[in-house]
View 1: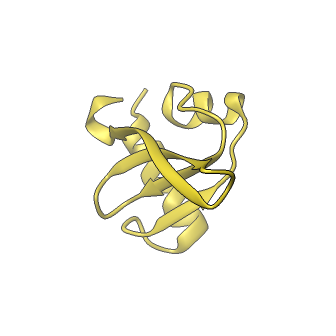
View 2 (view 1 turned 45 degrees about the vertical axis):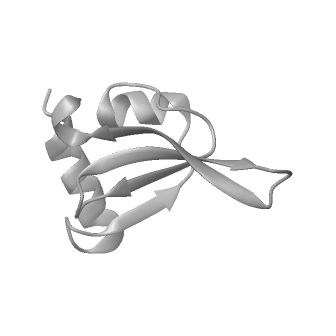
Length: 76
């Protein structure tokens, strides 16, 4: 299965361009269907320009955030 193509189509549907940036929450099953793995809880950021996926987690009592599990589309 070509997960990069799935991500491009997902971005095209949600943002109108394959080079857009989408952020939101996805369940574990939605993540596995879309890109074949579970990245983590919290906000998922799909960046079409950089072709990366990352998991944004709140830290410091919700005052700051940390980007974790940054994965390139070609590594899926």
